[in-house]
Image (cartoon, rainbow, N blue to C red):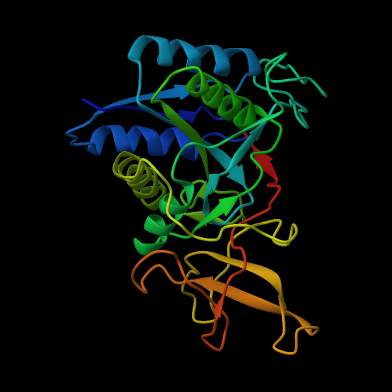
Length: 284
């Protein structure tokens, strides 16, 4: 039987709650399988989070590891594409540790790419009406640290896949004015990510890159208030070949079939990137 390990984090900094941990608890209560789901809430500490994650992996031998955490300031659920071997803490962790310019794993590779179907996760969350995007940075705090250790464990375990998903604040507990989603929607996105990861051993064939860091907060809404499923702002080469302009690009997950189509405002197909090269205000 397939085993999935899904983790969130405890509260950190000045927050009374952490929507990643709260959403993971909701998923645990609603999960009906048939696959085995193991859930846990990790401490927001560099020493404790990695050690706890590796102990859970050793105990349960999961086929899939999906770690999640809060990225306060992002407006969408964001599937991370890469973890880097760097710890550079802007704030202390919950033990008071604040390492700078240290490796997550001494002697480890500079980075690992996710082995989850990140693009399919984003596509399916968007299709469910939940704002979602790809992200090219998990930060340099405990979230990235856990993501790196999960991927390092997966690299040493044939058949195991791993990755990380950042979530925004929950609307029920978000600071005033902060981007947020209802906690139930965050939980739906995580449960959907579990299902998508089980059903897709390889990612979909779709363009997902970016040209530059263009949306530091992440997420957009249409003028009518509806969420963009996957959106970025990117430069587009005009029809004359030398005319650069700014264009809102929308990924159309409802248009049917893979690869995902990128459309400009006039409905023309574009082969440019989508996602978030974003640095969130708060990342656990």
